Picture 1 (cartoon, rainbow, N blue to C red):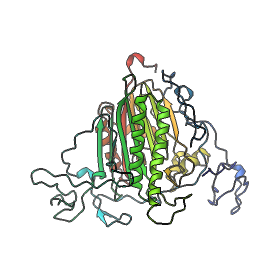
Picture 2 (spheres, one colour; picture 1 turned 90 degrees about the vertical axis):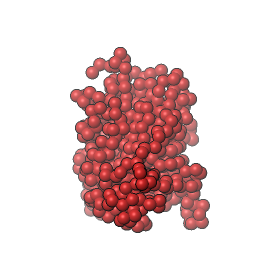
Picture 3 (cartoon, helix red, strand yellow; picture 1 turned 135 degrees about the vertical axis):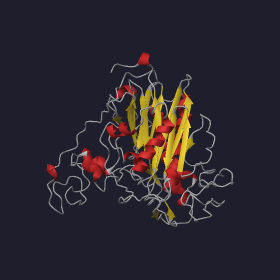
Length: 473
């Protein structure tokens, strides 16, 4: 499916009455709004404040396959933080999670789509059982178990036994014990599932994912991994995915995408693949994994248009790789990567640009960032992974920071409560590079304290610069 042509005025709808526009329109057909007065979005790329140095001794990225689904990737020396196409974001269809809903307090009741009503206990008050032993450093980790076969969903784990009595304490009434079916014997509440709160820490990377206080399930997923390059130097990666709630099986979409992207990167980096090319390929692999979920839906006898999967499973993706002095980021959608230096007297930066309605309004000069993200349409996304997405356009960028810091990879469940780079830097603990798991827990707690309106997922990747090789301030 080809992309829609971009109108000369850069708009798909009238800024006054929201009537759809056609390419070349000079006036709105509904209200007569003069579209020639709308400022054209500038082509100046975003230039984060992270210092970009000379490229390191990586081999050239492989040439682009003429049949590739997306744009060329870039080399570290080519860019000061632009996205991989070097051009404005394309105009395309909008997919939205629906209107925002006021957050509910811990203990209030929410209703999930097609599910019975269940309490939304505050995850911070849950009784934690003994944590599972960490996975080996060379194994990608996701926030949900990988399915045994592509068509099979991940099984729901049985509740972990608690101390002494052999069962856990209920997180709702704090009095009853939980039976083997996962329900409180005292108040009858269903207990949090394994995916409701997930944590993982490996050498050089940590991640936490939480259901939040409003949603009935966690539709986010992550994959973290540590590996080595051909020369033996370490490489760490983090992938974060956010399921599109208005789609079918969004939790499976995010889990499949995170698993596929993490596995792709973990396999490519030790082979010496240029890390930016590896990120590009990982996003393509994630898209194929999500597309396959729609193909499975089409095999169950239901009617499906083979050329258009309506409401197909979908998610966003964002990831980072830290390897050999380089910081690589890649994304599709509105999940983000932030750079927070250890020296907080130096400026932080946001390293990604949202595929969203709000970002397009800011780019077109119709709103400033504060106005755009305050609008109820702000989180309507214009890019996602899924069978009903337009042509896949992975964005990738490479950076070479001249000082140590921490890379924050997160879904909008966190950045809604710390939107700007300075806001994020204020809530990231000062010792985040030394205690990434603790800091990720603090950030999730910050979002919960703010209302926990959405699922919350954050991965932290410390970036260390050898003092002898650090650049000037």
